[in-house]
Length: 476
Image (cartoon, rainbow, N blue to C red):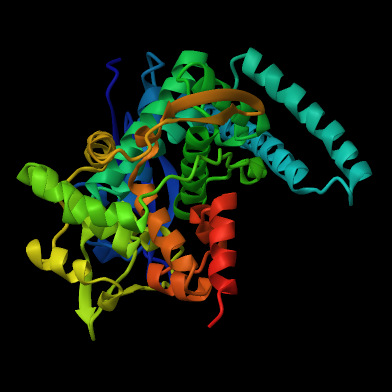
């Protein structure tokens, strides 16, 4: 007997509700087997010739997919027999359905087990030692049992963590593109950061798992950056800050469950020596030294002086997104773009009367101050200062200070000019006006509400302290 059968989607008789059950009809030697797909539809929504739902009908794609799945399972059952009679195909089909349901139940149990483990880790990190020692110990014991079961499943090849790492790496690779429309500089910085994280994972064979963002990952990541890439605390702290921001983004935008231990990671910093140009040095740079250099160096000096006089972050200088209103330069710091949606942002407000050179420099460049990439600006500034200090016999002696790798201390000695960067200009602005204005006035000019940030830029040296006290004690 030839092995010929047919399989086609059909609808049965319309019921009292005005809809007809959808089924798949298997036919062999004129004997039919009907398998319901679990949907009932109006007769007008079904294409009887094609045996499928019309494409514009409600739930068409879902129902058509179900028809295809049932049809494939019936065909697979029929092909296993030389004589695919209704009875043997029905039995084989029902066996396939039972096996599929068992597999789905097993997968669901494994997923629940993994979720339980992740949740247990999260709870442990959220419980404070002072309030729940016994509860924490009890939960740790339960969690160890779950971990043992997970390890057994992994060893038997029944569960794979690669899917979680695939998601981590996918979101990590996509992350820099969030910044591409905002700033080329931020985009490049994020690309470099992603490269650091993936290099760490690849070089140390550390899996990138949201469930493993714990203290061990923090220490391993820091050890790699400090002793393989020769980073110190401040550079490591910057990378950790970016990682924490990324994990917040994954939680907020993609509803990814992340081990909450990462929220307690410390952002390490080293306090660098405070270096900045004094008012006299700034005047000499602009009024005298500027006339002796090339047009390109004159432009560099203009940007340096402008940043000193306004206190902007260099990213705001490059953005040049400001307007002059009633002789006040007003705009919004680019850093505000990173803040949470709905949080009130503050504009920076730089009165032009602070110094006539602000308006003079702005008009020279038609209010656009994007002339140097960040890295080029900092490098060129150091070279310029070396020549400037030499020409005017300004102190450029070696400065000794300490950097750290975690708690380990390293003594560093470098010429003073090499310590300057765009941050030095912002420091100079704060130090200059801290002697004359309250912190609230300076914060209003900078467009910031962070006293902590303001304190970072202040000169805490003994000489500056005495200078401030002497100026305040002078008789009126």
